Image 1 (cartoon, rainbow, N blue to C red):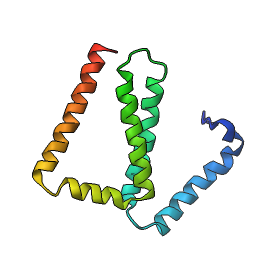
Image 2: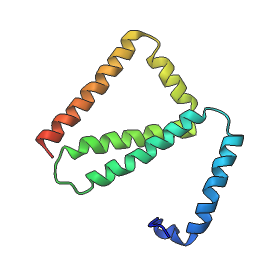
Image 3: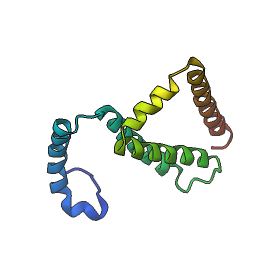
Image 4: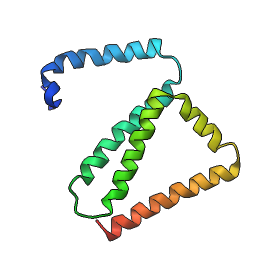
Amino acid sequence: ASNLDLGEFSGYRHLILMAVPVLTALTALFVQDLLTARALGILALLAAEPVLSAAFLHPAPARLLLVALAYAWIVAGMFWVGKPYLLRDQISWLTRTPQRYRIALLAGVVCGLVILACTFTQF
């Protein structure tokens, strides 16, 4: 027995454990369109949970930067899972010109440096 806690769904644990591989196989067989974008969306949704759990009830005000980032991942992940062509369109728009790509890259680096600076000064 594992320590898998499903909260109010713990009674359905065995059913869920049997259904996940079946649903994974059915998804791979019948949902052929843009599986990578859907998988990236699911990964964004899953990645937000540990960030939100770590920031929960933490006293430092800089935690709100991580919370905002996690919620942005959640919103983007929901769109990418539901409408995976949006990720393709976003990547196409972003890489259309080298200047757009550089600006996005610089924005990501600045965001990372701000979070890193807050880590050393606030946490």
